[in-house]
Amino acid sequence: MSGSTHSSPGSSSLRVVKAVANAEGVDPVELEPPLYDAVDPTAIDELFAPTTPNASRNGRLCFRYRGYDVTVQSDRAVFLE
Image (cartoon, rainbow, N blue to C red):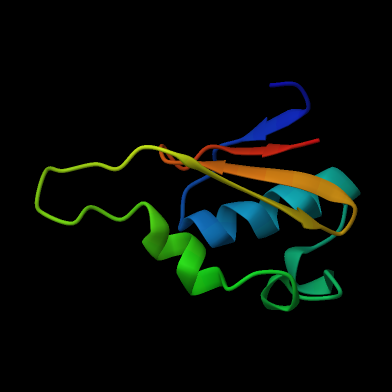
């Protein structure tokens, strides 16, 4: 996968916001429209949450936000293209 990769601390939705803000050189609170206008941030955070202790889920979520193709992987890595 090409593009930029981001793995900062925090929830997956927060990682998306930080990645886009970083790519655009702005503070995350300055992003308009907010992430929740494009996708449900809670759903992003819960999608790969373990269903039992020490369990993990596999997969990825792809969506468009602010002109970027955003991919969130189950390991919480965020890719922008």
